[in-house]
Length: 261
Image (cartoon, rainbow, N blue to C red; front, top):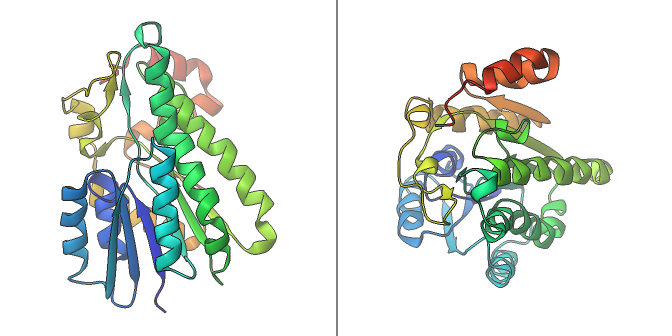
């Protein structure tokens, strides 16, 4: 049965790969991102498979643009079956050197932008007979890490909001999958925000050797469709989540030694 799928962060990385995963005949894709050129590339690739693809470019850090994008989507779709939040920005900068305005920008993109988008579209999502959400957090949403203070905080915040939302709409049959990827081979480190507010502009070695985005997208789609609540995706780095929970002394010993890149 065809479904209407909304995906943010669709222009590249995991969002691009996930868009292609959901681009099958009959589905209506509504793809969102900041980068219009790259978004058009994803949309055109998806059109080879999906019956209907709509692209909407907007900035998650700007409330008015989020509101306008949500209204546009509501005009396109009477109901949404899958709302998948992938868009976001990473960080490369120590807390002591990062000014508050940079922390606020990261929180606006990763947290406030997405919860505003969700609030605006939630009534349309709940109109579906089978409403599912996929929320992209990170293993940094499960523990703090070097040079990721605001990034980790924004991901921690997503857990609190969407776990609450899941409970509030349990009777509405809303499924919320919170996905925590580890190191995935995407350009996220290139666009990560530094202490100065500029782009990091480098592909970190850990990112470069991470799980392919296509593999991550396959695992994400399966988890979302199964309605799994909490999902870890990655290679051996996801062991750190288990160490943090069950062997904290080992976690801290390792975390103090790991290169933040």
